[in-house]
Image (cartoon, rainbow, N blue to C red; front, side, top):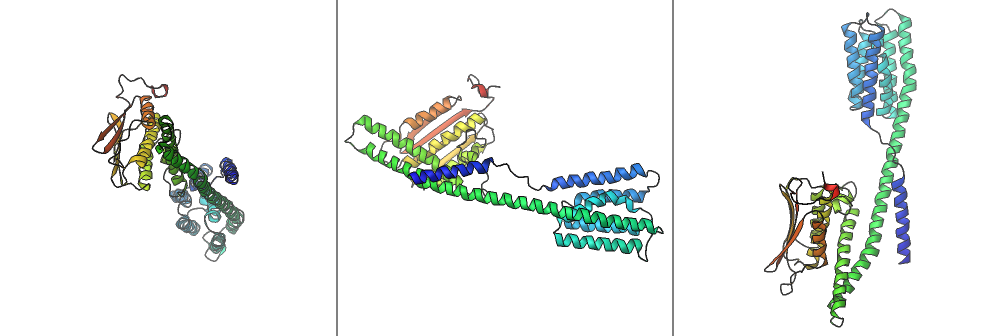
Length: 413
């Protein structure tokens, strides 16, 4: 017992350390889309502001094309890069427009070349770009007669490529390392979560089951006074409820986080605030089904319960599920129905009693607890027994249909 307790304390400490460690930012391509758009607009505005009289329609077309393509590259790297290279070569080949029409956007292109392609392909494309520029600008087919300007453009491309492409490769490496670290941290948390679930099952669930079993035997022992047997029965009911809630939690803990659609507090209804009542009730029905019952769960309507209504009804649903597991006949079907609106939120559970010759479940501590919870938010609980069947109905008025009901302070408008 001491060894397992120490193990749980160690796991809890590791979990707190992992959860409190600040999360590393993950790559987000939308940031690069914004960078591309800003650089493209800067290229357009800068050229228009510095050369307002020498720009023609073809220059504006190339600037707009550069803006669109440099924004596309982060979303579709390879097609965007190829399209941009075609646009850049066309700019150099045509006699009318100037190479400066895309000089600023070309800086973002060279950075994106290293950021969104692997180092080998990015450096190869940089080399192809430089060679193409050299052939177009200073080769026999040069389209301008200013060798100094052509040579300056070529040196500009080579220098910026030597600086920005490796910078993009470095950024890509850093972000990939952070992503790998984040994935490893998630894997460590998954392993830790499963280990915690195993320890809780082996220690807490086993001890709780033994407590409930011994209390049940003591409650059936006629050698004890009736008052003592009632106390043992209440202890068995409390232990069974706690074991039921623990099963819900362990079932969620064992699910990989990649397949878990809802947070634990929402999926199990164990959090202080439950926002998705449908999912919480569905989790209870799934737990009852896992206990060996044939369960039919239905939900109707679309009224939105308040936070306190969702939290209360999720706990009432768990109490209903615990009663089904303790008292229902496993060979008979169980139905759980959640009706949301329009005027009331209604949760109904029906089942057959396990032993037809035994007394039907009576309003003990579980029924009383559900009534008290519902009464606190203006709701009611009704029970009905008929020919070996047992039905429990929890009803709460929907907001806007609560005339005459005094609401708790947090529910008042």
